[in-house]
View 1: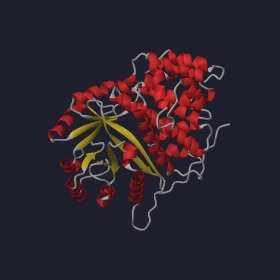
View 2: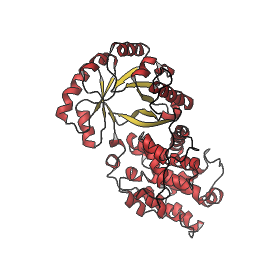
View 3: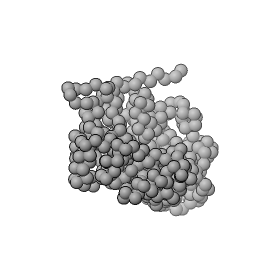
View 4: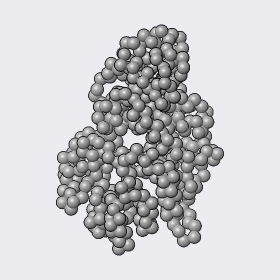
Length: 419
């Protein structure tokens, strides 16, 4: 019987923040675009438009959590409306922290130009979102440092003159909606120097590599850990087949994150923290084996760990069952990206439970709901987020705190995991 989802009634205090990485020409992640939306009804209090109120709520919420927690110290790009710009709400942030991304709905009228001039004088960097060459945007170009061009479905012949003209004005061109390696190469060829899009997270970018001995060993041990009939002696033997892995795992278990200081052997670790905890760390290590490939791979691993932890926190907050299993579902959901092979093929090596497999491959079952919600949050698809949220007892504004906590957790784990 299908679950009937009850969307939460939206309020102006429910704020969502997601992030999308921005890369440079060397595949180094240089910033995150923060995507926030309000779910308020289109009503106004007094003479103040609803979008101004909700933007202010979003900014206050982001300040409460802290940009560093959301971006790991990287520059934060955030969308800004006309009302937002004219009200000067961006002054809540230091110019060193943010790039102000003017939405495509903004035109270069006198008030907007004056506001842009003030923002530039105060040290803020401005970017124009979805630039399309409209004449009414010409007045904004002298104040912008970056122009974002949507490149999906456009040819090199179409884009090249536009990029050349923008660069001639001293503007940096960011190619957005870059979905394939060919598109990425083309955009670099014509002069784009910043990039954003699915090419950085889809299997195409990280594919084409055989699994390493270490990855195969981790998968083998994960399978053994999931079988209660396997003895500690057999598990120890499996670890001994890869001493570096054994040493790395003991370093992690003895880290500050677990509170342990004197775990000296794999059997000792299993007795103290249990197989479930070892399995969790092995999943983290499996993801981390990819991180050293390139900056893009490192970012993909970090996003994977954020999703896994976010699924776990969502499960705990919603009281939706086994949060450890939800962590595994979140992590496994991106192993196709990390390992460069179909997810079904990855799962063949892991004796995962049927409900985990159905959530990952069919998007159904007990664990699918949290995974759908996490992915929707990452994509700033707030309608889907609310459709999967539980009844009104769950506070949607807590999602932002959970996501920030997940991002912090992932960054810390990658620091602790030996390369």
